[in-house]
Amino acid sequence: MSTPGAVPPTAASSPSPATGAVPLVARRRPRLPRSVLLVVLGVVLVVVAALLLGTRAAAGLLALQLLVCAVVRAVRPAPGPNALAVRSRALDVLTLTAFALVLGVLAAIVPSAR
Image 1: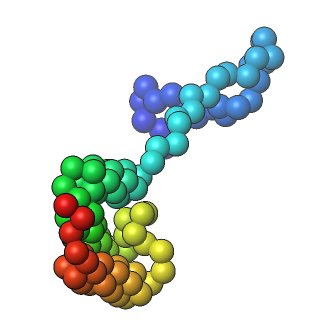
Image 2: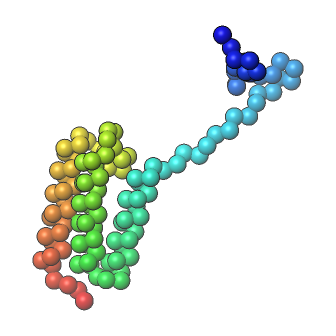
Image 3: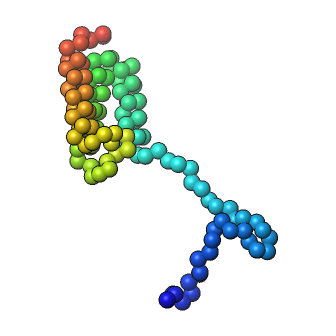
């Protein structure tokens, strides 16, 4: 049963019988997932903080970013953000949290360069 006024489906890649030309197919460029862009933006901000505020503050900000990534990975539904979903959810959250805690402790005990 067809809808009145509906256009019948045609093969997009078949040549036209009259001219033999293949119609052009519009292709979109692949885009980076939003999670990858946000993680890269966070790392860029940490580098800027390292240059402006010092290594101790930058290490603290990087630890905070890792902790935020762990929370995001824990609460987002499957399959999760592309930049953060590497292994199982539990292993990703455990790894990100452990790295954040270790980096936070190191940021607190390392003497400031300034």
